[in-house]
Length: 115
Image 1 (tube, helix red, strand yellow):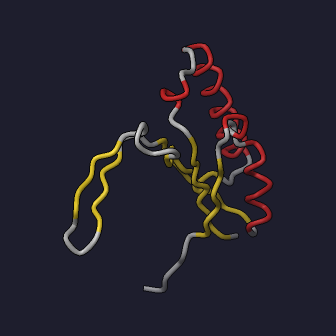
Image 2 (cartoon, one colour):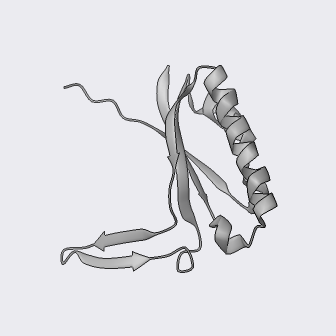
């Protein structure tokens, strides 16, 4: 088994203007998906991320504070999962709750280094 990160990219919920009821329903889908992965023993952790971003760029280390209004798509969070290969994670990602909002799942294998 290998460890993978599923990175969730999409619009900020607040920017989409979802009602409190819609947000509650969306969170229910997220919790159900997380619980499904926990029960299967493949979820290793993860977090939701705020829409606020601070970037430090280049040789002069230019600092910019950005909000979701300035960024078309944000990284909204991630899950770490254990799986055999990319195909297995792709199958897990079929239940991602935000495809209907134009969301994206990016799958990355976590590098393991000998120490």
